[in-house]
Amino acid sequence: MQAGLIVVLMCLAAGLGLYLLTLHVRGVRKPVLIGVHVILGFFATEQTVVTIKGSNYGDLLPPQPAGDLVACFLGLALFAGLVGPLFQRKSPHVTERILIAHITLGAAALVLALRWASTL
Image (cartoon, rainbow, N blue to C red; front, side, top):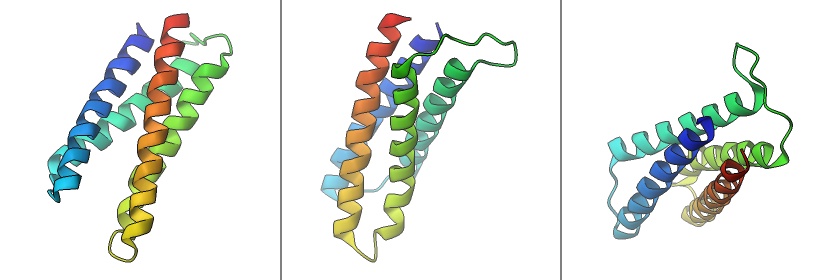
């Protein structure tokens, strides 16, 4: 059940991210939608870590490298997504590369999460 929630959150974040990418290409910014995208990413990362490490009740899962990779890629995608706008005015080229890294890491995390959810 927990893995299903993670996949749903990640799919919502990815779908909204694709929409935001089309807006970015057009030069339009929607801060509220960006905020929702960030919140969905944080929730997906938090749920992944809780699923891997267990909650307060001690329901720890057996070690699974796929879950650790999902958490790692989600964390890196979050970091890239939060750091990217800091370089927007100074160096647009760096911002575009960070955005590409954000998209790649997020897509890799989603694919790994689907694989991981199918094994739980």
